[in-house]
Structure formats: structure tokens, C-alpha cells
Image: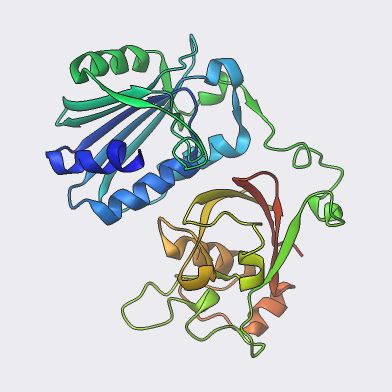
Length: 312
């Protein structure tokens, strides 16, 4: 279904994707942009309307995830991303329209929300072709009752609720739940020899022709096979202890690395900023020890949301 809805239409000389979905996630948005970048040589504009916000509100991490996507550099094959929330009557529709310069070409409707779970092999959904002209008219009708996710006053239009009850409890830092109430793993930023990797891990980009900020968090095979993190290049959201929202995925041979998929340098920039090393600089074990720790702890909140603790 993913191939039929998202990638086969790219052969039809289209350059815009319009989406109306009752529910949507930044993980799915990130996944789609990454895969369009690998598939299309044409720069695509993506317009996303999320319809059930007036009914359910949004979690803080989902809202922040969409804002992060709107502010970060986009892949080369994604010209623009516009994400908006319905703020009036809830919209439960699921509609996907491909267009060429605002002229609708092909459209699909059905039961699949714009989420990774809806387009996974573990869910049974149905989608069918529909009239693209009528679909585009419907899109613009819904759009008239939307507010941009990064609008300065967006929080006056929508209801935000905590990502997880633990994150909302200021009196109990999440590290106190390392006793197993919240599943967790701690991953080292060091290589096997006890130093940082020379061209791997946090120093992945330290080679000619690469962005020197490129980095990944090493993932041991035992933990990769444990089911703690989603595999198959699925994207997942991470809320950090200093209030950032990152979208990550497991990749590379044997699922050995956790990266920021839309830009591998984003993770390296984040980690260097945390430990007080300049962008692009080589990171030594001594830099991590000076900061106060050489590892990172992930807490699993649900199948697509995690908390990252790099505090000292």
C-alpha cells in the first residue's frame, strides 16, 4: 500500500502531495520525506492537514516534532513541508492527493491515517482511488479551518497534553524510574578500545568529503535484537532531558547505529553542543569525561516515543 500511495505516483510527473488525515505523526512525515529523497529526482511540496486535533488535542512531543520538521533543513527532494492543524470541527477523513503545479492528478481515500502503524504490515487498512478534482476541493475546504503548526499563537487554537505522565512529573526525574517501571537501555558513546571511534560513532563524519558533524549512537547487536527499538528503518520520536525533540531511526548493516535520518549531522551537532565541543570538531573520550558521562540512556514510553537522558 505504501508503494501504491506514495511512490508509484512519482512516475506521473507530479510535484505536490496534499494530505488530509485524522491522525498523523512526525515519525511518518520524516519517514516519507527520507524515502521520497531516495526515490524522486523532482523536488516535492508536501501539505499536511491534521484533522482530529479539536477532538483529541496533541501530545507535546508530537507538536514539537512537527515544529522541528518545519524548522530543520529538508532533504533535497522535498522542496517544502507545510503542516497545519484543524482547529474547528474535527475531521476524520484520510485523503492523499498528488498534483502537478496545483492541478490534481491522482487521489486516494480510505481508512489509513498518516502514521507508520497504519501503513505497516501489522495493520489491515483499505485505500481506493477517488476523483482528484473533488478531493482537491475538499482539501481546500478543510484547509480554511486550519492553523500552521508553527504559528506564533498556535497554542491558543489547540489543546496540548503531556507526552507521558512521567515526563509531566517535575518532582521525579525520569532517571529515578530506571528500576524497570519504564524500560530503559544505556548505550556507550565509546568504541571497543575505550576511546571514541576515529571514523564511527560520534566521529562518523571525520573523513574527507563528509559533514564533520555526522554522527550515530552505536547500538550493540544484543540490544538491536531485543525489540527495544523499532527496526526496518522505522522512525521514532525522542524527547531529550533538555527539552529537544529529535526523530531517530536504527540503520546501517546489522542495525548497528541510531541516527537522525533526515540529516545525519543533526545528532552530531546536538551531542557536541551538549558536551561543549565546537561544531565539526573531533570528539575525544576526554571531552565526554569532562562533560560528565560517556553514555546515553533511552527510556521507552511506547512503540514510537522515547526519552533520552544525557544529563549529568
